[in-house]
Image (cartoon, rainbow, N blue to C red; front, side, top):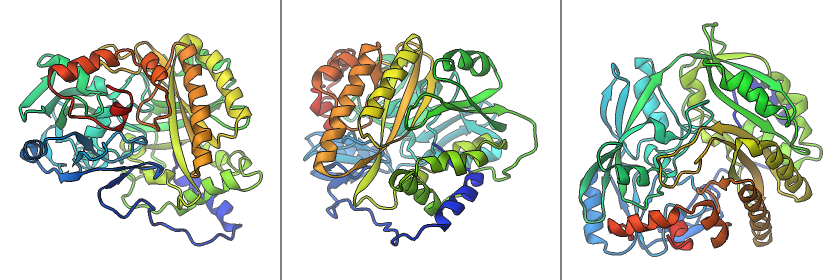
Length: 472
């Protein structure tokens, strides 16, 4: 889900007719600095200590002084304790955010792991370059993105692993190693998507692409026709950069396809990057109205989409520099916004989509939309989520914060995981830990090999709530 300046016109119309209580912008995580709270504010992990990391020597010293379990924290956007372990030490990587090397001629950059994508975009944009593969939003750290093997809307790119040239890691004994496809390849392919389980990633070297103008177009097709439409209109067009298709309540059966294609047309938005520090009150009001006001779900169709369907031409870096704050609720007293994601082989697309629709219609899930993307196979990464070409289904939903609501979410999440598994698919790991042990093992049988490799390099002390729960 994304917003652009044209949407603000629609949001102004919606917000103008409402009388709302003042928005509370204070986070409601525990005041205790050792209570690690993630982006949903639903789960907190009480750690034994936090080390502020500004360089590799800080990592080594922290590992030497702290003999217990260690976790690694970046932007803290994961949703199930993937950056912390109870009573352990968390390494806060965000202060380690410097530029190591930038080679514009060869389109290569090397940065410290705590740098956020938005900071990197500021560095490379003047050289006419763009990040090759990243999430749809620029708020995440580079190291954290490597840790979860992120992906975005990039057509044909697959996960970020394909654009990573090399990693620098600190191993449990403090040894500093360089890892790539040629050097320490086993560690390299285990650290990407390894959620901090192999070592502490301190530097990342990436391939870059050119920045250029892209034009947005939208289409509507039936769910049955979408796979063929995607192959013919999107996948086969070398000028297409970004694509996703959104399914909406209540039938989730007629995706709105959004495609960004390389163009030489005049810009409709002249900023090269999304401005920093934006206030997103209108976006918050829009989401609130859409999920709380009777008939609110129709606001998207009636007000926002007619404006969004108009063509737009922007810089690639502008669309890639969106701020995740656009998706933040005004407060989390009653509810929060959460994600799930499922990966399904191409041949099972229609069957999965239809059955998913039944689950989302028969259960009050609070789903705002389901965003469909595509990824080619990722065969080298050990904990890969795409071992064949897959479509991904990103479920964006509003969840109440009560214990009963959390229990209900766990139930329908497990039903969704079972559905993906029955279609030879899997689910994405950065989110709430509702999967059973059996579901995790079926989805990620390679975790057994990952655990053995961790033991071989002595990395078992590098852990988090997720690895502990699933005994990896």
